[in-house]
Length: 156
Image 1 (cartoon, one colour):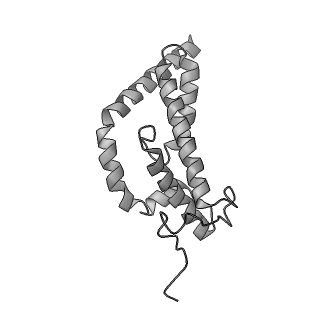
Image 2: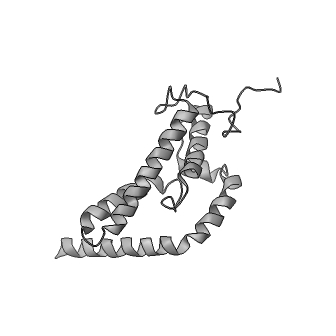
Image 3: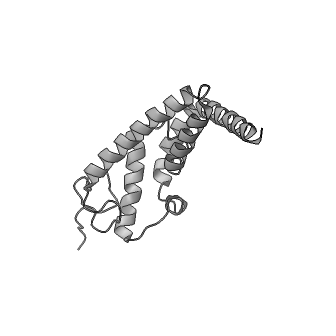
């Protein structure tokens, strides 16, 4: 009774081969498969984000569209997702998905974060984000400038 096979509280070791049974999106996938998919998606989108930021001067509208789309997709999980290690961010997302699976309900990541479930992991993420803070400010300034240019172009 005290032993429970593969509890959801230790997501890094016990759940590598767990199969999502209830989950409406990831049903039938193992944790290992989902983690690999998420890491691949994050790494791909980080490259796309960097390319869009680099090309912002030449093609403002296309770059802005790409940047906004990528920010919507990943900034829910980490504000500095573009500089975060894809494996660490995938671990965070996988833990959230396991929580949804164990509760057998779809919850928002904002509610999950508000519940305090990420508190143990926040200290390492905060340390990393303070190192990349100037990069985020520069990126935010570029994004704001692009947005202003876009709005002026539409109004003109």
